Amino acid sequence: MFFHFTFTYMLIQYLEPIYNFCRGQVEDHSYYHMFDRAVADYLPRDARTDVLIPKILIAALLGYLGMGLFCTFLDLILIHCNLRHVKKQGEKSFFTISEWLLAVRVSLRNIVLLNWVVSLPILHLWRTLYGIENMLGEDDEWNWQRELPRFAICVVVIETVFYWTHWLLHFPYLYKRIHKMHHTFTAPIAVAAPYAHPIEFLFGNLAGVILGLALANPHPWTAYYWVCYAIVTTCGSHSGYECFGCRGHDLHHEKFTVNFGVAKITDILMGTDYESSDFYKKDMQTKTE
Ligand SMILES: [Zn+2]
Ligand SMILES: [Zn+2]
Image (cartoon, rainbow, N blue to C red):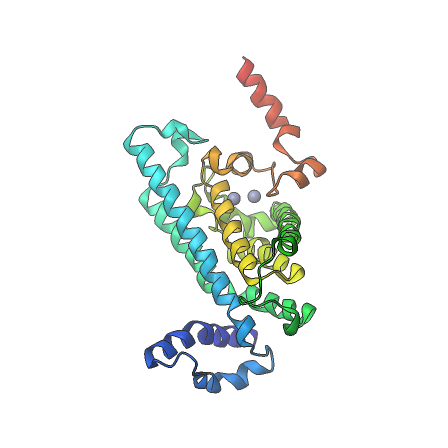
């Protein structure tokens, strides 16, 4: 039933604007009627907040494709100019064409086809927590004094959810069945950031990004920006370029048991940061020798 509902809602969200556009009737909602009965019991329709999920998806796609393709372009320049050593793990930080295609295919499957499984229930939670009437619409004024603390809540939520789900995924039982897929690449590139098992992508990555929105109740434009920012920085942390913040997470892919979080703070608090590990001491020793 849940998947039936999710699929039906996905159809409405994707097809309705296209259908109306083709008919030249942008305001006509008659297309809903055949789906209404199936959906209404689970998620009340509301024109103002219904746009959130498709637009959040567009923001995520723009972030992924923008950063992913930009870093791929940089990789090609480095290959062309024989400057592969510039990347964090040098020669290793480059994909073959088939690896690149695999990473993009799995990432797009996760972002476009699977996101509904988590984003719909969390939007429902958002509406339940605050009530539709207390959620801001795109037409409402955007005010940074109000939005900044809400953005900060999103940062705290993703750091907490990502750290602990990621830490759990490194337990042998879960690692073998779920997280090993994301660790296929020991020297990842930007387009491989969302390359993960569906369970990991939905509950370890996406849920943490969207849950912050449900808890903080930000303006829709803050929500779009946050989702785009989250995926751009995730691609950056997998890019192999230190200037895009790859250092911490690249070390995680290289060493496996350090740097589980996003913002480093939880790693420092829990003693799982690279600098507190034996790897660091060994690497320092090798450098001085
Ligand atoms: Zn990773
Ligand atoms: Zn990991």
